[in-house]
Image (tube, rainbow, N blue to C red; front, side, top):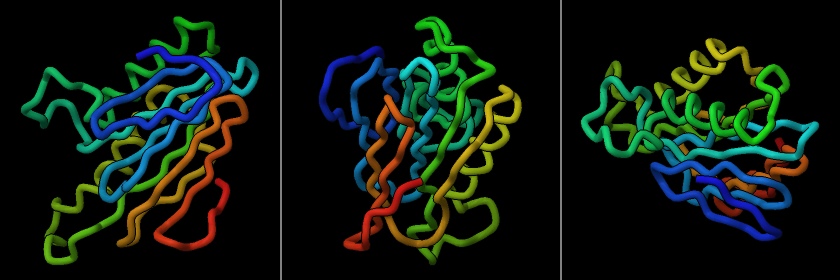
Length: 164
């Protein structure tokens, strides 16, 4: 989805937005979900996804591709380049991927880290530099992504806001 204007816009779970500056995209309550921010620093455009699951091929809901980490990245790259972004100049930042429920720590069940791994693998396939990440742990996160600058402000609980 293409958006623009001078405002904040929340990216709901399972969705992604491609934005033209100036705008701040937010993800509130990231647990095992992953926020993936892609941006072209030279053109001031970017995108953010709020994904739930690692791989489109493993999912049952084929009508909502934005919920899958791998396919959301492919879709965002396509839309960003259609808006004039240079694929070779795109940068990526990721946040989230927590293990929220310790009782579900069996092999293969850590959806948070599987989301992180899927993002890293897909970004590598696309040739996009991962310049920053804040992932894992057992606490949720809120993030604010300034499309114009590529800066992400991140807060865990009531902790101080940090910049990634």
